[in-house]
Image 1 (cartoon, rainbow, N blue to C red):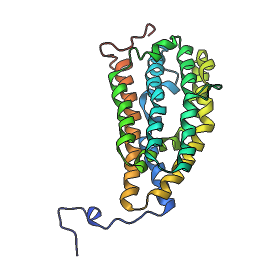
Image 2: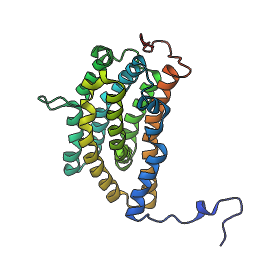
Image 3: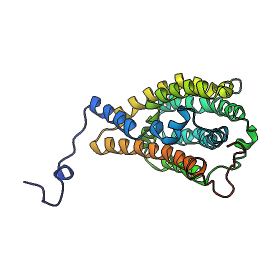
Length: 256
């Protein structure tokens, strides 16, 4: 029986489970299309075309995101009744919060803020954070708290693409902004942490997406996460690059 003329056949066809290799390839295709490595703000950063003030705005706004990653991961932990999953996932919280003896990603990002010339208190207090940054970060925490565990874990799969971006970023930051070199420990750590985290999360998603619908929900979750990351850079670009209109109460760079 043919599909009605006004409805695409692809929408009426029975959905089938994607083979594992094809399912995994779909995540990488989403990353190529949607990950924020292609955002104009990042392109300017990697070309050495951002001012110190623009980098300061990026650092303090991104800190707000970084500071909420352990909250996001704690929400995911609370969703699982599998001790082996929780044992593996709680590493992420320690990676960002530290273990009491070794600094975690949050402390390392504060050092990056200081390397830009701003006091760490500016980031800790959230002074001048863009409204869109707050909304986007809260949207991420809300997403992992209210959607299925499968979708929450799948949303973390941007880590599949971060190694390449971080490698490029560290190289270009050292090249174009040598005064930032002392604040790059966060990225150096993520070069080993992110691939391990992504490997675990991808294997878990592949194993636990048991229906065509669940596979598609996993894809949608990753797209949502990419949108959240992109939206944060959109806000930075609008406020500090073009047209350069920071909203009331937002950070105002002293150096153009």
